[in-house]
Image (cartoon, rainbow, N blue to C red):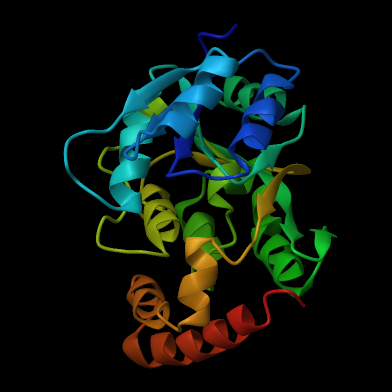
Length: 263
């Protein structure tokens, strides 16, 4: 079964959370292949990989950026289904089984993704205002008849990005590469979902909470929100769905919601 699904861990520099991520993947009930992809190879990453008998694939083409790293990870996953695991996050034991079952049940699936919770410095957060809004936006995708609708896929994405990137598994042969926005810093995944929403096929939403996304001060998204650098990218994304005057208003609302990410 390991030939069907692979976790490709995007590792960067020396994350103190990397080994916890690896261990959560080793504890999956569905036996998936695990590899590490990195553009910053170092002794720390290689030591963890050696300890867990994991292959390290090095991106040495000289291109730098999160988008390039994600595209490289997607190409490195030679299995049918690919999950780009973020080094700071962890996965519940049923995650791989759930996404593979969804993909096998619905062959028209482009991506399969689960609900998730967060871990902040203050502890585990399973529900807050932002998570509730995202679950509300995703509600139509609970129904398979709507998961394949181009209109519904785009409406789900039109008011923000409710899909958690590390919770997504890709059907590799249905995903164009390059996929991610290499000139973005925060909305590279929203850009990818918008691109895929134009494709024929389903967004398979699994409403079970099956992974943990870590929100901490060292994270890129946290830094961008704190420095108010997301607005231009948010505006660019809203323009893919709305006229200019609506996009400008949505940017202000979206920025305000991100300021209160812990609520």
